Length: 130
Image (spheres, rainbow, N blue to C red):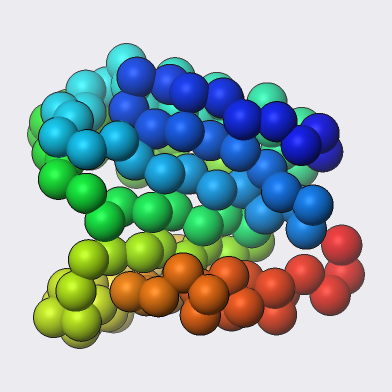
């Protein structure tokens, strides 16, 4: 994977030297279904459509339309995710999302964090075979 950074309308996406894809949402955005498609095309491009580790920073104000949420779920099935760490802004959000995650069915590990270094270290634990 190349070490490059691409801005979409809603986020900056880059891949680092450990082949981890960083997705950093911009502040005060309203996400629509075209944004979801655009973001996922960028992710597939940077990962060369290979299984990847993802670090998603959502610690800003944002919202997603119901149509975009449905599109995100469909796109998620097309992405080849090995593991995903999601940064949120507070410990109560970690607890809430971790509880809600129990009702989801994911084909890969996903965990919520408030600390970037902890999230990154957790993702590196999945990088042994890359």
